[in-house]
Length: 358
Image 1 (tube, rainbow, N blue to C red):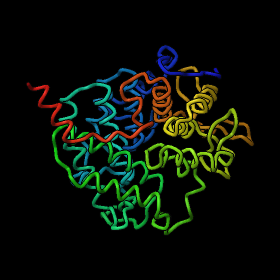
Image 2 (image 1 turned 90 degrees about the vertical axis):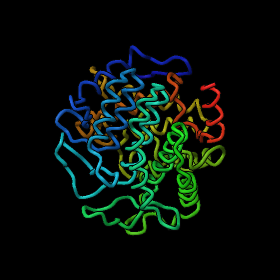
Image 3 (image 1 turned 180 degrees about the vertical axis):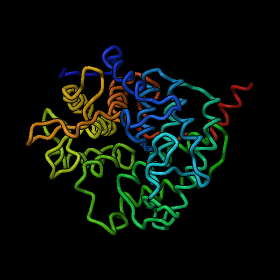
Image 4 (image 1 turned 120 degrees about the horizontal axis):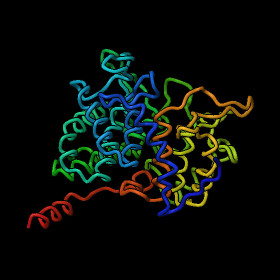
C-alpha cells in the first residue's frame, strides 16, 4: 500500500492494528521487546517499541516493558548496551542516551494512561537513570556518549545522542514536577546541554570523523526541541536535498543510497515540530510501500541495487511508524511529545494539586 495521507483526527486504527500486533507478538513473557524474534534488545529501541504499544492501547503490555527495564537497572542507574533475555549481550559499554530515554518513554506512557501508580512506581528508575547521565556532563554542557565496561567515560559526545537526552531531561523534569519531587539541577543541566548543541560544535565528534553525514545529526536537534520555529525550519531546509529521496524516504547516511523507515518517521515528527505539516504528511505517505502483510515494516530500501536491506523488520521501526501516525493525527494525549516543548511549572502544578485536594 502507498499514499496513506493522514491528518488531525483521522488515526487509521484498523490499518495500523497489525503493526501493534506485530510488536505484541515479538514481546517476550518477561516484558522484553527484542528487535525481532530471536534478536537482541537494547534499552532505547525497547522503549521506542513500548511507546508504540501505548499508542495502540496496549497499556498493560507497555507497562510490562517498562517493568522489565526497572528489574534490570544496574546500581548506578544504567543498563548495558544490549540483552538477550536475562543475559547481557553487550557488556562493553553503557550509553547515556539509551539510559536517559527511559524518562521519555515513562512520561509518554503516563500522558496516555494517566496512571499515577505507574508514574510513582517508575520514579526511582527514572531518578537513578538521570543521575547516571548527568554525572557525565562536562563543564561545557555536552554529555559523554557512554562509559566502558569498568565505568570509565568514553571521552566524546554525539549530537544525536545529546539531542535525545535533551528531550529526555524535559520529560524527566515533568515527571518530577508531577510527583512533587524537587530536582533543581535537571533544568539547568538541560539548558547547558542545549547551549552546547547550539553554539559549541567543537565539543562533539572530537575523537572520530564527524557524524554530520548521518541524517539524525541533521534533524534530531529539531525533533527534540533544541531548535524551534524559524531556526528549525532553516535547519531542515539547509540539508533537505542531501538526505531526502522523493517518494522513498530519508537516507540514513548522505553518501549511502539507502532510505530507512524509522529515520523517515522521525523526520516526519521533526517537520511537525518545525510547523511544516504539509510536508510531514507527504513524507509519511511514502512509507506504506515498505509495509508487509503482517503489519511490520522493513528497515530500509537500497536505491541502487533496488532491494530491501537489511532483511529485517524491527519492532522499533513499527514503533516509529505508530509514533509518527499519532503525531500527525493527534490521536492520543501524547501525540505532541516530539512536536513541541512543554516544561511544567512547579508552582502551577502545586496550585493545581492543592485545588484537586480541596
